[in-house]
Length: 449
Image (cartoon, rainbow, N blue to C red; front, top):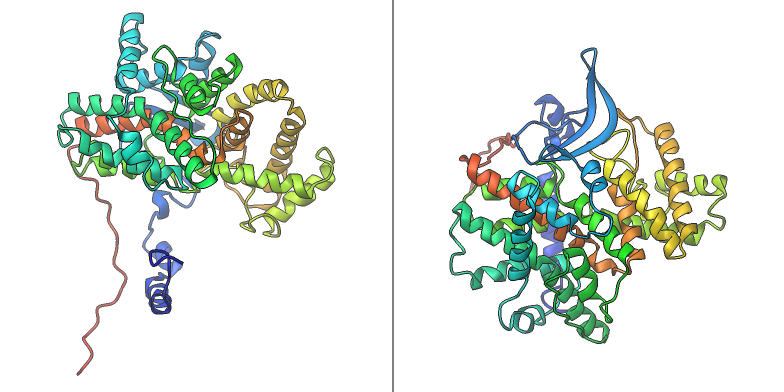
């Protein structure tokens, strides 16, 4: 074992001290009315800021009471469902339109949109030898770490890296939106080559293609993809582009931006947040859970057999014994996650085209049965439904995207939202974000001697 990986016995002993002296009595959180995770006991988020960028609706007021409703998501006041519905069917630039909307607050006029797409194409070029000197050196098995390292290294190539004026930050953000697909896919290709002994493909992006099309083009050895594949990936990027100001990675962007630091540091911090399995890595858990279901449930359409397995998940007797059915439930949404509903429409079409309709039926069965079981076995203050992660991993697997790129694809989309929120914080923030923590450790006297 490498010295950089070895945990010496002395460290394990010291770790026990950390554990013993870092525990806090859970009753103290109730005593002092602490909003753990910035959420109250009913799961409602503590209001910590205002935003123009996106809005999540999960409840409505009826006769003075808050009542759960079908979930809705808005970007700059526009319904995301309507945004997708109005997109021309043969057009794969929906993500670019969404990025423009998030950044500038309005849907683009034709000439403005052409200029924006040309800017993205112009900036979709890495510095000379960056692939060789940075991406190819010490490739990591975790693409999110690779992506964060690449973002931080880009600081060194930017002569105005510390300039946080709005025009310069906007330039940096447009560059990062353009470069994230290259940094992610090239990082994966390098790891696949050096660790798995596979052929190395470094395809150049096509300036005429959309973000979704270029992801498929530079990832695949033959650069080929279908119209349906590009459309479905484009829609997935739209749905992941933003999700209010309170999700963990976007809030991280606001917090770190409020300190006055540079763009690369703020975005690297957001990437660190998104990497977590409770946030961006959740769809990987869903895919692995379904692989476990397939290996233990013989008849996918036998509701009794499937329900028995799902109960084992809830009772911590199957898969990772976490007690969770991954992809079910959301911190904010109750009756439905609008992103999951939209995705489900395209999943059925794609699964038919890929010859995987039986798997789609399995997903549908699990979604329906899990809702009933969770509602029956758990005391929940709101409804439970499939979230966006439930279907996104299945979509990515049908697009032949490797598991290692699932979370980076999320980042490729969410960089648009992070950029908009960073600029919003710079313009309207002013104060460093600093919540309060109450110290509960009693004061002590030094020991004698």
